[in-house]
Amino acid sequence: MKIIVRKITKPLMGEVTIPGDKSISHRAIIIPSISKGKTIITNLLESEDVKNTINSLKALGVKIIKKNNKIIIYGKGLNSLKKSNKNLYFGNSGTTARLLTGLLASQPFKTKIFGDKSLSKRPMDRIINPMIKMGAKFEHRNKKLPYTIIGKNYLNNINYKILNPSSQIKSGIVLACLNTNGLSKIYEKSITRDHTEIMLKNFKSDIKIKKKNRLKIISIKGRKELKPSNITVPGDFSSASFFIVAALLIKDSRISIKNINLNPTRTGLLLALKKMNANIDIRNIRKLNGEKVGDIYVKYSQLKGCNLNRYVAPTMIDEYPILSIAAANAKTVSKFYGLEELKIKESNRLLSIKKNLDKFGVKCNIKNNSITINPKLRNIKYKKIIINSNKDHRIAMSFFIMGLLSNNEVIIKDAQYIKTSFPKFINEFKKIGVKVLN
Ligand code: S3P
Image 1 (cartoon, rainbow, N blue to C red):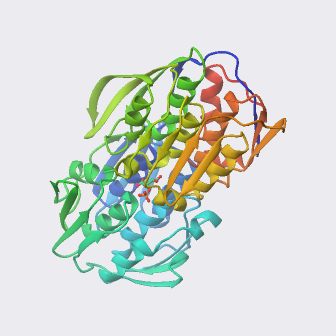
Image 2: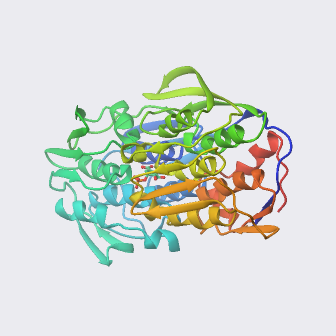
C-alpha cells in the first residue's frame, strides 16, 4: 500500500488520541500470562506486533480474552506454559522475539520461532548467548531467526553484564531469571527503558534495583510466583512524537496530546527538542501503575539545530527518524552521536534517514556512528519524491511528516507497515486537518 502526501497549507489544530504504549503492551501480555490469577488490561495497543505476542501466548496455553474493550488474562504461574503445537510467528516484532526467547528458555519444552524478512536479519546472538550460559539449548543457523529453543525448567542463575544498550535483551534475561533457582544479577552500563522492572515490582516479584553512577544492577530471586495487578496502558510517547514534531514544524499549529507515558528512560526527544527551541508544555503529571504519565501541549516553533551526545541515544532510540525530520527543517545544522543501534532496527535506520532526506536535497553525512544533518535545501528537480520505507513503520511515519512540509508530492511506499505500531496514524492526522490520498 502507498500513501500520497502533499504540502499542508493550514495549521494543525485540536486534540490527538494516541494508542497504548507498544513496549508496555507487550509486557502487559507476557507478565500476566506467567502470574497466578486474573489480570484486566485497559487501553492495550492492538497493533500487528502486539497481536503476535498475544497469539504466541495463546498458543502456549494461556487463556486470553477480550471483553468490553478490555483484555483479560488468566495466568497459571511461572511454570504453567504448555508446548505449542505450531511454530510461533513473531512477524516484524523484535520485542516479541527477544522477550519470548528469554521466557521460553526457562520452560521445559521445545519451541520453534520465526519472523518476517526484516526480523530474520536482526541479531539474536545477544539473547541466545546469555540463555546458553543459563543452560538452555538452541537449534539455529548463525544465531538468527528461525530457530528452536530447547528450554529447561529452573535454569542456572546468572551474573551478566549487558554489552549492548538494549532493553529487549535486559528484559529477555530478566524473564528467564524469574523461573531460575537462586539469585541472578544483571549489570547494565547504559540506562534503557525499564518498563519490565516497573511491572515486575507491581506484580510482587523479588526484584531489586541499585544504581551506582551510570551502572544499574538488577537482582532477581527466582521461583517467586507473581501476583496479578490490573494494568492501564498509557499512550505511547514514541507514537506521539510524530504529532509533536509535525505541530512544531507546521506554521501556527497548536495541539494537545493527553495521557502519554513520560517514563524518563523514554523521553530524551523532549530534551532534544527543548534544546532546539521547541515550545512544549507538560501538564498534569501523575503516576499510573508505577509509570510517569502526563499531557503534552505543543505550539509551532522556529527550531534551530542541536548536537546530541551518545549517552542520550538509548532514551530516544526510536525517535531519531522523526528527530531527523525536525533537524532537516531547522535553521541550523544538527549532529547526533552514538547511533550504532539504529543500524539494526526494523531497517538500517541511519541509512534510511540519509537516503530519503537526500531526495529532498537535505545534506546528511554519516561518519562512524554519527549523523550530521544540514538543513540547507539544495535544488530538487523532481516533482514527485518516492520514499522507500524499507518496510519500516517509523521511517514511513517520519517521511509522512516530511511530505506535509514539502513542495513536492511525496509517495510513501509500503505504508501498510505503519500498522506494526500505530494502525490509526492517518485517521488521527485527518482529525487535526490533514488530507491524505491513497
Ligand atoms: C523496545 C526496546 C528498544 C526499542 C524497541 C522496543 C522494548 O529496542 O527500539 O522499539 O520494548 O524493549 P532495543 O532494546 O533493542 O534497543
